Amino acid sequence: MMSFFKKLFKKSSPAPGRKTKEKPANLACKIGAADFTLLQEQSEQTDFTCQILYNWDKVEISRFQESTDFAKWEQGFVFGKEAQIRWRRRNGGFHLVLISDTTIAEGWDEARTIQPEPMTGPLPGLLLWGEKLTGPEYAGQLAWFDARIPHILEYPIANPDPAKMRVAIGLKRYSLQESTQALQQGRQELGLVKIPLPETHITYLERFTEVFEQ
Image (cartoon, rainbow, N blue to C red; front, side):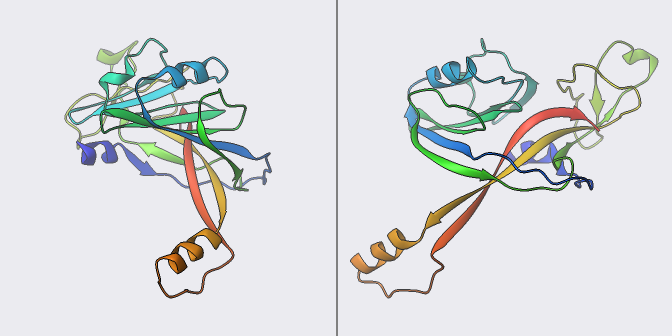
């Protein structure tokens, strides 16, 4: 099923345009959460618009619905222009990770500051599989099809454009800078040889922002 989920996405290229610069964002997590209370609380102050839910035998991409029983799904994402929460079932609980451009609800752990990456033009996206079905039998129905996937695909497009046949998920990138001092100190405590490292280590992260036609 993991391979099927990966098949839904392939990369599209960024278009040229102006550079943008934004304020720092927030990265936080909750390890071993018993339920999705934090997700519900975060949704009260964040405009989530879409969700991706998947088990080993099923994938759903739809509009965000607060009433969804997220605990029935092994993994998933809820996201919008301002933030994303990603989760995975682990050891009888759920591991949640939040990336937010705005304030975060109380209860998240290990909150860190991350920096949006300067980018050129419209943000790059993941191009979803399938082309829009436009035959008379699909009048009034939003459906996409790809011969490599043996069923009709549905995506949460609010105002479809007849001229656009593909769908993509927007991406936003961030960087997290961390000192390597703790790593070197840990190696020393274990009796390991000190290795040459830069003073800071940079980790790059991405999140989903929207589902749109392209």
